[in-house]
Length: 521
Image 1 (cartoon, helix red, strand yellow):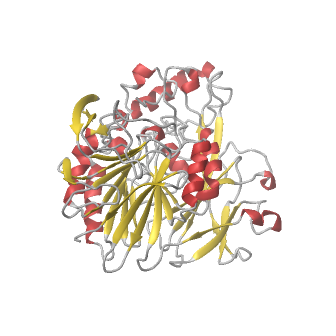
Image 2 (cartoon, rainbow, N blue to C red):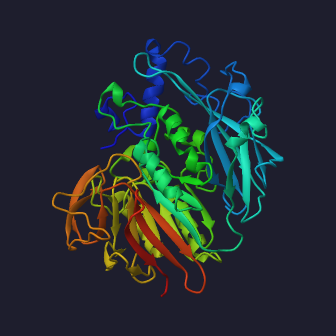
Image 3 (cartoon, rainbow, N blue to C red):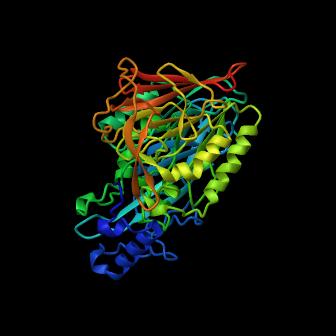
């Protein structure tokens, strides 16, 4: 089970909430100063938080007090990643990292790569990770974010990131100029991609290269982003490595600098070092739409509309029975917000489909199986508002259900089939083959995918109940299964007969599954 370690004894961590883990680390580091590297705690405990220079309400474009004396010209930006603002037609967020504190960071944008005339100020979010002598070093990280608003819909912009002493308009730095495109003013055909559970590896890089070939308008990341927080096994080597984020952002720069990277939160993305809810690190690193139930406290919860599709990102840690470290942390506010957002999107003019994505699986037969907490909290709302597609990660496989209605098969959806959510139920897709080590399926259960379809039958599996109890169940809804690295490609079409053309692709680009979603057809 993927319970975070953070240097806490595993048996203890398994019984602790994220807030308790945070308090344990905070008091342990303060009371046992001999374990902390010299000077690591100096000036970092602000208001009882280990998050220095990046407290949720403290935003500044000036360097944190512990700034280095490195000249700005010697500090090279890296790890660019884009995200939409609340309206993808007019708002884009540009983020990047610098290895040392800098002054007056900014983005230059323009309509041509040789004409970056507009200069937009950016903010630095400084993340401090205390060091433990002999175990992990002190790490200072500086994440920079610029909000680009009032953009023109359906327009390609070129941009470069910089700071005092480093100007992307200078000839020496022009090779680092990138581009992005805003969403169109009116719905039109577009492609988006999705996967979860990526990490830093050759497979993770290959996933990036493969999806970039599909020319997506944006990418959905269903959580477990980089695995800086590994699987705790009671060993110091299993502890938290903040610098894995540096490696991850460098790995993803070639794609995320031009394709908006819309992430949500997995269980490996809860990092107790920075805040009681575990999300201080994610808030520092990403600038996502700020329209969730708590935009600063839960950065992985938000919604946006692109073309004729509405998208809702959720934090399944809030309702997970399997990994209860953050179970109930929102006090029901996220679920209430979800209902309001689904109601809003379902009645919005021009929105034909609603896609929801989050980490833990509502329906899967692989290693983590299904989460009863997801089923209890959210599936009634998905049914009531006829969600068209649900995308998950968590299980490192590709698995796709038939259309599920009331917990059973509402309509069989074989490879190449179609479904109508207004009548048949909802298709749930596990797209956890983004790059992390792969899982398998229950003993005796064979892969079944396009070109390799096996006889359909019942699968013995389980789901998680309250109290971390695993309950056996035999299911008929597991339709397509594939254990290789893979990702999801979805083509959204408009017009008199709108549809979602959903395909699953192996890293090689070979198609392993496809089906269509149509409403009222």
